[in-house]
Every structure is written in structure tokens, then in C-alpha cells.
Length: 299
Ligand code: G3H
Ligand code: ZN
Image (cartoon, rainbow, N blue to C red; front, side, top):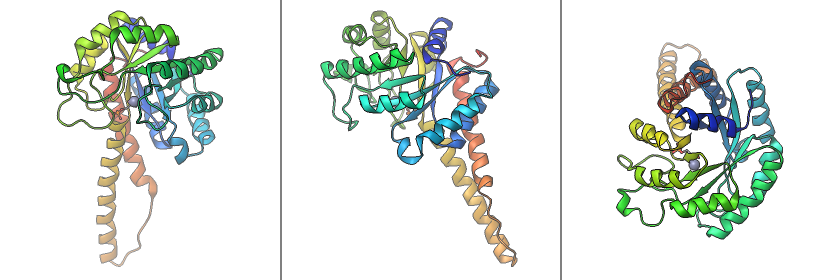
């Protein structure tokens, strides 16, 4: 059942769990996300980045997700992850997302910081269009990045008063916060700024979002949820599950081919023998995260 993320995240906040937002790039990853949610009876968000549209025709990926979604009784939302401009957000609105993220913390290059005023301006324009269509809006303030300790965080972590002012100025539904998480793998164990999260949650009345969920220790995730995180983004962990399995399968295929060649037989090529185990591995990884987020059994 396709719903707006606002409903999913509001229920999560009340129920003291988080909804996982998992990135899909192709048929196998989308199928793995749906399968994990159905096995876990867990609400979920399936999310797509703007760069994925360079890899696949957007209409094809959305048609696939919607067709799969029609067969599921688990509530889910389709979300644009890290929309970097007003234009990109409008494109995804037309494609049929039920929520989107306008990431106004950085400029369109994804590197250069936007000023507070620029962030509010682009976020507000996107919010006006999205809300007119009943679509939930996530925004971001602060800069994601691994920290070694709160005292070393400098100005990059989300500041409570500024976050509260931003939410009031921009009128969004969920807020991604910088609390020491980063995209991709961490060097060593990440340090999560729970005290800062607590201070932000005390000032900001809307559900908070953790980006860079891969590699954050389970206890840190649970503590962050207890402090106000209601959506956790996971991308890299799905990629790792895919890569690890594909590499192992390819090694197996090479071994089989060598045996076939040595015995004078004929090689058989079956793409599914590589991709089906990779899909299963992604599904298992996602199920594991749903369990940590406490969303298992909530659908
Ligand atoms: O927006 C996506 C995420 O924040 C995912 O981060 O790749 O570290 O899991 P991750
Ligand atoms: Zn992110």
C-alpha cells in the first residue's frame, strides 16, 4: 500500500521505532527491499537518488516499483533521496514519489555548502509544490561527516536553535540532522553525537532523520531512535551485500568453467545464478536493519 512517508514516520515516532529508507537502483535491489519488508511485516521507504536516473530510465524503474507495490499489503513510500535542486524535485514529483528530500545544505554539485538563506529559499519553494500534491518533504541542515568526538565536531553538526528556526522558516515535515554520521563506510567505529541529537530533538518538533546508517553500531542506532530519529537511511550496506555475493558467485562460476573446460564440456551461462543469491543477500541485510530499527512486525 503506497502512502506518504509522513504517516509512516509519525507512527514510528509515536511507537519509538524508525522506518528504514533503503536505496533501490535496479530490479533486484527493489525486489530485495519489498521481500525484506514482507518477511518482516515492516513499513518501509524505498528511495531513489537523482544519479540513478543516469543509470536507468526513470519511468521503467518507477513502473517496476509501483507494479511490485500493488501486490504488497505492507505500507510503503517512494522517496527521492538527496534531491539537489528545485528542478530535480519537480521531476520526481511528476514521476510519482510520495515523499522527497530537498538537500539544500549543499549546492547542486553536492560539495559546496549553501548558506542558511539559500537553503531556506530552495527548501521552501520545493515544499510549496510538494505539499500542494500531498507529498512529504524532508530537508537537511548541518553537514554530514564522521567525527572523532563531539568536542571536535566544530560547526558542522546540526545546531539546535538554527534547526528550529529552519523548520519554522521552511515548513518541512522531517529533518535530516548532522550528528556524526556520514555516507559510505566509516574509518573505525563512528562516534555519534547523542547529546547534540537530544538537544536538537528538544527544539525541533518534527521527526528527525539519520543519514549514513550503514556501519552505525546497533546500540547507537537504538539510542538515536529513542532520542527522536524516526527514519534511518541505508544504502552502502545493500551495495556491500550485493558486491560480496556477486564476487563469491563469480569465483564459483570461474571454478565451474575451469572444470567444464578441463573435461571438454560446454559452458552454460545463466545470469540468474549470480543475481538471485545477491538479491537474497540484500534482502537479509535489509531484514537485519529493520529488526534493529524496531519496525519489524509494525505493518
Ligand atoms: O541517503 C542515503 C544514506 O544516507 C545512506 O547512507 O550509504 O552510508 O548507508 P549509507
Ligand atoms: Zn544520505
